[in-house]
Image 1 (cartoon, rainbow, N blue to C red):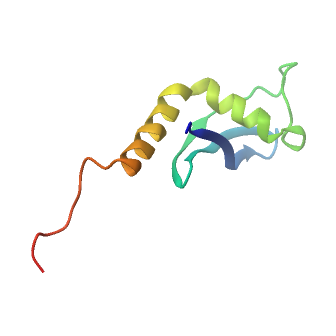
Image 2: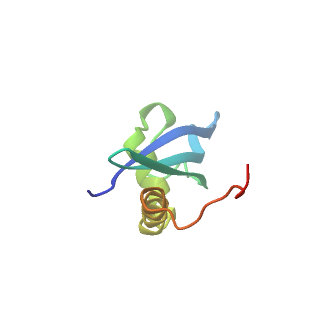
Length: 101
């Protein structure tokens, strides 16, 4: 089965005076059957409120934030890392514990 990835935004930080988003806190979750793994991080941004492409806080969508965050990230590397975590869950190569009672 293939891993299905979902990107979401946990929170954003903004400058109230300009409505510009400075930090995007993102999460990527991968699911393959009963196995799930995720990665979480944040990206910094320096929006220019005088730029014609500026989107004010009240008009920003989650899709905008995901696109802005992914533009600064190595999306493939993050998803491959999640896939590796899931593969390790499905077929463990390491264990822990103690061999005695």
